[in-house]
Every structure is written in C-alpha cells, then in structure tokens.
Image (cartoon, rainbow, N blue to C red):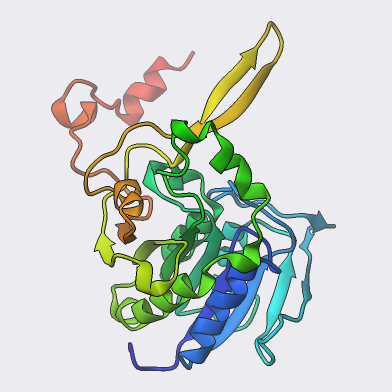
Length: 290
C-alpha cells in the first residue's frame, strides 16, 4: 500500500489559510497522492477531540476555498473543530473517506501529555478511531531552552510577533513526506505524532523515537485570583525527562511518538474483577425498587 496512490485528508487547528497546512498538503500532493484539504475556517487551537461546529438549522456550514500553489486540490473552510472535520471526512462529506489523515503543520510543538488538549492531535486520533491512519505534524517554534526562566517569558511572548514566513515549514513537511510510505503500511488506526525543530533541515540533529513528557512545553498557572475570579497565565513547563519528546527537542532532534487512541485499560484489576464489588443481578435490582 505504501507505493499506492492514496486518498489523503489534510487538516489542522490553525485555520485553513495557515502557512503550515499549505506546506503539508503540498508534500502529500507532490508524493503523488489524491489530496483534499478541509480545515477550520478560523483558528481552533486547544480543542482536543471536541466535536463542535457552527450550524444553521442543523447544517454544518463549509465553503470551497483556493490555496496558493495548490491548483486542483479541493479545499474547504469548515465551521467546525478539527476532530469534527476528521469525523465528517470519514463519512465521505469531502469526497471518498481518506486512507490517511495529516494534521498540521501546527505553529508550535505538540509534545508531552498536553497533547490531550491539542486540536492537531485530536483530529488525528479521531480519524484513527474511524480506522484511518493519521499523522500529526508540529513545528517547534519555541524550544524549551529558549522558553526557560532565563528569558523572563520573553521567548513565549515573542511567538505572537514572529513572522510565519520566516519559519522552516519545509523542514517539517519533508520529514512528514518521508513517513508517508511507512504510515500507509501501518495497521489501521495508527497515530504518529511528529515534532520538528524550527531550523533548516541540515541543522536538525536527526529523527528520534520519543516518549511523551509528563508535562507540556508550556503550562497554565494562576496569575491572580479573588473571591469571584481567576486570571490565568502561561508559563514554561518545568524539568526535563531524558528520552522524552520535550527533552529531545531541546537537543535539536525531531521527535516521533506513536500515540494510542483512546481505548480500554484492560490491564487494570477492577473492583468487580477482585470481588470487592459484586454486581447485582436483575432480580436483586427489582427487589430493591420501592
């Protein structure tokens, strides 16, 4: 299957006109696949796997758009969250259901267990739940080292002022393209999470398998609170765990992590298994009713 022409959906959470999605769609198109782009009409970051949409009399609205340099690639701006878009794609809304779903390239790393809240990863996991193979791709525009306490928070604030046309989107797009043949032959439901340093390809230390750090690259903190309010702030995540995605990104590596879609934790011994709690029979339930 890896050498076959595949149906590929490209989505993101930064919005359909974000620069990263253009590069990712181009990478899949240049690899010879049938590409469709469907992404939120505006930024939808932090949505996780939420299924939200703007509806009009129950109808989820979307419109055709043109993407520069991608003539002939169908593209849709959708008034919905990334995961909802992945779900719609699996139901043939934007053409035949995709074999692969590519989500990104996100402006900022999606690393550590904080990927739970990522709309980029949420779209990939939702697609995988429907049987597709999926790859979430993110560009680490803030390295953990740059965002340390020594910067006084300046590096994090600078994210909003840096020019996206100076980012190394092609570095991430090239790595994603190289992963497509392997992903195409992977078991159905496979999800990969790729994070790439924002630097020229020749300056990336390599591609390493990584574990998820037990924290995110940044984290929420309480800046101020009162009797009826709380004001939150974003701070640099603390600590480094060797071999984790955040640790390896700090060292200049691109990281790849296989993410397991939500499923049963079958290895846990539950109270019912241990005889601590015995389920009542239907007869016992009937007897307990008034």
